Length: 234
Image (cartoon, rainbow, N blue to C red):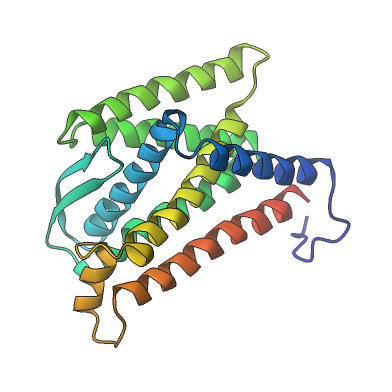
């Protein structure tokens, strides 16, 4: 079957459920933004941010010496070598990309299972390079959480694996855009990835400028995930 890129005859039942669920999740996330209930999911976004730095480092032949995720929603990845101007933007843009991937993975049970399996594998790998107990606890906690959700999916009538993957994807996408605005535009943290990237890049663009560019790209990832999700479900 050819992809329905024009979204003709939109929207069927699955597409409506997809859009409504994203809308509901967005409202819930914004309503609970300052509460402790979302803290574990925010830390997952920080984890994906730091993991993206690590992946970019490995792909450019560098070495990852350690990763940390802090309870105050900060994080750091220690690297040696690699292509620094690719490693720096990989954090913010990478976490936005993973948010898009998770949203798309939620459109099908098989891909949701694959996403859950990749999550568990990633947490297991990072568990051995984690440099602080916040990250170790996050890895152990989410391995147990995803495993329980997966078992409920397979063994009971509580079939929510796709919705959990979708929630993590939406949360990651929203938090990535917010994090870029908060760190790079509104407060302009001078030790941020964007400020460091501006120092490396020969073009006349400061850290705020790169923050705006990265924020736009992250928002495009979110919109692209919704569009491609509708195409898949059509």
